[in-house]
Length: 375
Image (cartoon, rainbow, N blue to C red):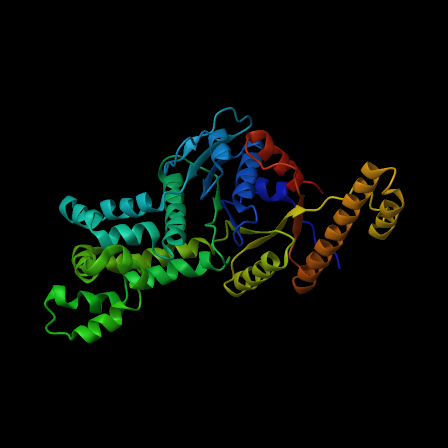
């Protein structure tokens, strides 16, 4: 069963599409795909902002991002439209929320708190939450200031693609939940509480963090909650508002996967989740597909020829073995892709062949965009 084709140019040219979210498990090329889509859309006349998470240094430099920068910067030399690019700084984004919703003294108390510093830098789910928060900020900025008619979002390099959807809600619930308020009770004068109860509650989420913060962790949490109290109620609401943007009519998800069992399994889970959450799926980008130049020469024939020529024509024999390896890889990838298509027959698919070198400049991104848009 062949999958319907994902028309990348139709997606990029659609004025009704304002947000494209590239998602998938880690290591499948989401960042490169997001950057290539954004560059191609800009060259086709759109005013685009791409939010990247962890681009390779040379790729960042080619886009004018010489250091981690939480502010969109115009990429020079783009003809047709405009392209702005930025890299998510999750701590700075968290700091911006604190500064925007607190007075100066309270904000400084929060920013200086060791628990907050750990939470904003390394707590599970913070990067996913802040990616969605930054998307919300960019949408608001596009409505009131710099107008981008397309925002392309690269999602964090999570083990599971579902982390992008699940982690923000978990963090929002944690920040606005009962547990952290129980921990803050002594600081708020809530009366006596046994050390055993405190330690039992604390152990639910501070096991790893206590190694960093030491014995002061409980006091730091209490002081953090006391200073942060005015912001608690807004975090779950903010998470829900930003989450609703992912369900908006102008949003499209592009699931990125490599033709490997784990990556396609994650892609399948994510497609099912998007359908369950009624989120708009554009299709699947299958990255790093093995290209075969002589498909009529089977792997078996190539290996047999290599055995016959191994003595006098070793170079030719090696080339035949290489061809056989590629044919077998291509056959395995085709089988995996067909399994995905069989499970999701209505999901459009675009394929990108495996490139010889890593993509590290605008020319490379242009090539990826061209490959994405091939019929």
